[in-house]
Structures are given as C-alpha cells and as structure tokens.
Amino acid sequence: MTIEGNGVLVTGASRGLGRALAEALAAKGARVALVAREPGPLGDVVDGIRRRGGIAHAIAGDIGDKHAIHRIAGQAQGLVGEIAIAIHNASTLGPVPLRLLLDTECEDLADVLETNLVGPFRLTKILAGAMALRGAGTIVHVSSDASVEPYPRWGAYGVSKAAQDHLSRILAAELADTGVRVIAVDPGEMDTRMHADAMPDADRAQLQRPADVAARIVAMIEDGEHAQSGARLVAPNWRAAEAVS
Amino acid sequence: MIARAFQRVASREPPSELPTAVYALRTAEVPRRDVRLVVIDRARDDSYVTPFGSLVGLLRAGDLVVVNDAATLPASLAGATAAGQAFELRLSAPIDGNRLTGVLLGPGDHRTRTEHRAAPPVIAIGDRVRLGAAAARSIDARVLGAIGRRVELRADANADELWQALYASGRPVQYAHRPELLPLYAVQTAYAARPWAVEMPSAGRALTWDVLLGLRRAGVAIATLTHAAGLSSTGDDALDRALPWPERYELPQRTIDELARAKDRGGRVIAIGTTVVRALESAAPELHAGSGIARLRLDGAYRPRVVDGLVSGLHAPGESHFDLLSAFAPRARLERAIALAHARGLSGHELGDACLVM
Image (cartoon, rainbow over all chains, first blue to last red; front, side):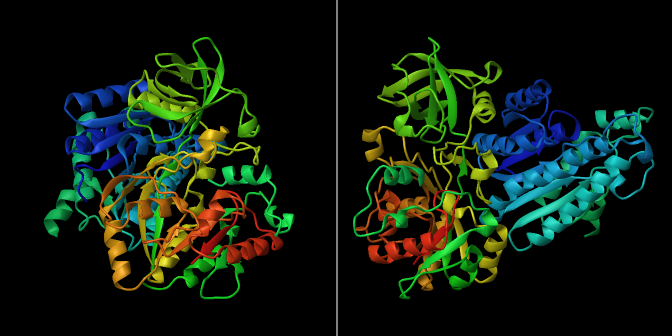
C-alpha cells in the first residue's frame, strides 16, 4: 500500500515505537493523526514532524476510554481526512513491577484488556467500515512475543496481546476480499520506556532502536505481498523473510 | 433529516382525505438490527413490511448501492457572547480550516422545540464569542459574518485545538421529539469516514456489515460519496422555508466508474438516503469526480436521472421528505405504504424503521 498522500492514525504516538512510526510515515508523505493521553509530549512529536516539512496533527485521548473513541476517530478524520492506515500501537503493561497473575487485581487485568484489546477493537469498528467500502486499507496491531510465550509475571499484558493477535486474524478473515489488510507485528525487544518499566535491569545496548523497527513496519505496510492479511509478523525477522522469498 | 418534517406535521392539520392516525408514526428508537423495511415496488401492487436485511434478496446482481459515508459531527455547541449571553451554535456545514458556519439558537436545549426557543443574542460582525461548555475546553472565536441567525465564525485556535474542543464540548444536533441525549456513536453509520454531516445520514443506519457483505456476495456493488448533510430545522420560519441549503458533496472517481458500469449492465442505482439522491441528481447529467455543491430541491415533479430507487426513513404525507419520496413513486402508493407502516407499529424519524422505494 502506498503511504504518500494517505491519512494515517497512530495510537500511543508520543513515545517509543509509536513516535518512530509517526515520524517514518510522515517522512514518506503521509498525513498523520497522532493519538496519546498526554498532550505535552505529543505536541513535541507533532512539532518535530512539522519542522521537517511533514503533516502531523495531535489528538489528546485515551484509547482505553470507551467514550473517547468516537471523538478520536472524528478528530482524526476531520484533521487528515479518510484514514487509510490505522496502527494500534498504544498499550499498557498494567501495574509495574510486573506481578504474578495470582497477585494481579481483577480490575488491573480488566484495565489492561480495555486499553490493549477493547480499545483497538472499538477504533477498528469505526475505521474499517469506510476502508472496506473504499476497497483499501491497512490495520496494524502491535503485538509482542509475550502473546506467544507464557512469561511469568507478564500475565495481564500477555493475555491482552494474545487476544489482540486473534482479533487481528478474525478481522482479516471477516474482511477477506474487501481490500482491507489486517496484520499483527511483534516488534521484538526495543529500547523504550515500556521496556525499561518491565525490565529495568536489561542491557539497553542489546535492544533494538525504535526507529529501526519502525522502518521495518513501514516496509511491511508497503509490501502487501509479503505481509498478507491475517499474518503475524516478527519485525526482527522481516529482512530475512524478504531475502528468502 | 426527518425532524423538521415531524415538527411541521405536528403543527399542521393533515389533509382531510386521510385519517389522522396515519400520521402518528411512533418515534421510538429502533435498534439497528431490528429495523424493518417497507417495500414500495412499482412493479407490485401492494407494499409489504420485511426485516431490513431482506434488502439483500430484494436487489439483483448488477445493481449498485450508493451510500453517504459522511460521519456525523457533534454539531451542537454551547456558547456565550462577550457580555455573557448564552446561545447554542448549530453548525450547518463542515468545518473549513478554523472557520465555523452555523445557526444560532437562544438559551435552552433541544428539549424545547426549535420554533419555541428563545431568540439568540444579537451578534454583529467583529464580535467575540466563546464556544464550548466548560472553561477548560472552550475556545474563542470572532464573528466574520452574521445575517440574522446565520453566522460565520473564525476560531482563535489552530485546527488541532478546534477539533479537540469541538469533540470535547459538542453534542449531536437533536430535536424535541427525543428528549434523551444521544451519544455520538448512536448517530454514526457503520462506514462513516470524514465528519461532514451535521445531522446523521440516517437511511444507512441499518446497513450493518452483515447486510453490506451480504449485498456484495449477492453481486450488488456498493459505492460511496460524501455529502455534508445539513440542518433539517432552525426554528426560524423564513430560514426553514429555504432548507435544504446548498450542501457540499464529493464524488470519488471509483463511484463514477461504478455508476457507469451499473448503467452499462442494466443494473439499478439505489441511493441510501435523500442526501445521496441530492448529490447524484445535482451532479447529473455529466458526473465528474471531485467536489460540488448540491442545490437541487427534489419533489414529486422531479424525475430522477441517475437514481432508480431509494432507501429512506419513514416520512408521512405532509412532511417535506414525503414530497421527495414522491419523485420515486406515486403519492397514493406512498400514502398507502405509510398507512401500512402505521398499522404495523413501525417507527418514523431518523432512528426508526425504513422504506425502499423502487
């Protein structure tokens, strides 16, 4: 799918991978509508993109808030027009330090699901219909290897990401033949604030830079042949997959 | 779009040849999946009532369904003059940069019928006003134009701030027949995209994805246009007589291509809602991709050039939209169909049941 000239929505765009994706997509000529809870850091991202000649708009909103979803989608399409690419990047670990499931409050699990699973579902419900009638669109769910591996203490997050992976696959099946592509991407371990919150003792030198991961995800968006609808892709393996094919 | 018609009906005596009961369609909101369809088919003698999903079987392979994909704005905003006099601004057109176009109503809310609302404060070009309910969310604006109750404002805010304030403070435009406050999602279709409509393009409300994908599987093509559905009532008699005002629309090239293909293969063009009729018939006969202004006023004398059939809400005789429907079927047929809808307990209004006229 072409990125230049298209409207793109990125959630969780004030930091880390979301920010890197916003910058990479804007650099390719997309009009990016960026969502984050805190207007301050988000404004810095928007200002940076505009200084480099890109088109970016800020939307303050919490993807985990049921009542915010139609506002977010409305503001985004008011500001950048039809959304051709939606990237569900915002997510929460829940309380840190991470806890065993048996020590996790029920409400904390519910909150994590609300942000990481139900929020993307609600937003897709609003955006995917218009994509399907236009016959084109890409929806990206940012996943995690915690959705596949049962890491102790990653319970709430892992459960939410596993469910989001399946949400992605079922949406892809239901939207087959509409022109809407739905993929999930495990970005791999990155040097982000979320990673530091979860694993404060990690060796940051061993971690990927968000900008490098964002470049691979942008390549996936552009390459419908190798990133087909319903796929769950692992970003660190992307170049390898390209070479093999 | 039905509210104005309802208010007119309620304030007028029905024509004497029909029983009063015919006009009293219920106003209850019908859940999208429970919407019923009154089918008024010129090829048949009698109308009948069927679940909305039957649309899939009623259309033929090769037909083309055209929807209005405009999302509905939270177009009602509380405001105050510099002197602190309250008003309600109802947007009448899409937002253009940092410019807002709309109509002022006096203090109060939609529970008071628009024609009974207090007059808005007098506002002059150059005045400053404040928009938005709570102080933290409000934005200031300057009056660029004021003709009676119609105003054009320029927000002292960038686009991001304006849209943030609009969605934080604005509410869907509503009318007195439905006192409870509607959430924004209740006035969106399942395929809404850019927020251009100030009232819901409600004929598409029952088009669930089950129905839309069913139509596709049945070989029915679906295409979109974007039409900035405007206000159906302002409460000002002189203004209301001129409604609908010219409204902006945009026709994508792919829709023009689909229309040509449908005509080539002998398929019918079914408009979902009067806004689609208005856009397509205003654009006819030479359809070009891009933006246009719909100025056409439809009535029983109009013979559609592009559209062969229409899905609409239910409109009783005497309503302006009933006149519009009569461009697609004889009045007597429509009157009998509305009597049937009434007898079967169907709901009128923008959140009610529907009809297919073809």
